[in-house]
Image (cartoon, rainbow, N blue to C red; front, side, top):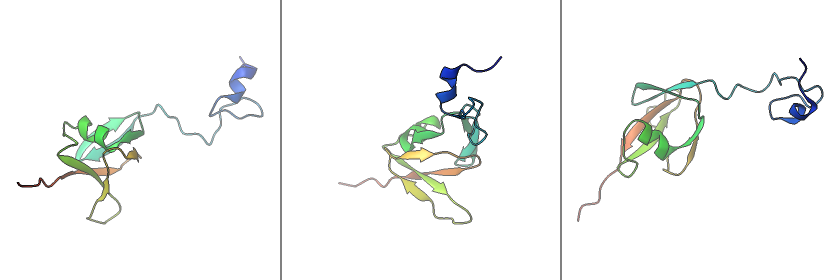
Length: 102
């Protein structure tokens, strides 16, 4: 059964014939990544750093999220409110925040 004309203008559909666009990635497919070496998966590919920390039971007030890229051993640090684009195989680490001493 052909798609209705209304569906032709949906995101992920070719505007010419309403067929699924081959250049669009399935958004509901889970993506697998690690935080502190522990495997995680999600279908929500854009999340705040704080949400990713909470996912593994860490308090964003006490930890920052970092991402390891390539062979670099120094993680790229994210702010708690910063949106993180999660890709298949990404490696994240928790970074303990330093507490000020009175």
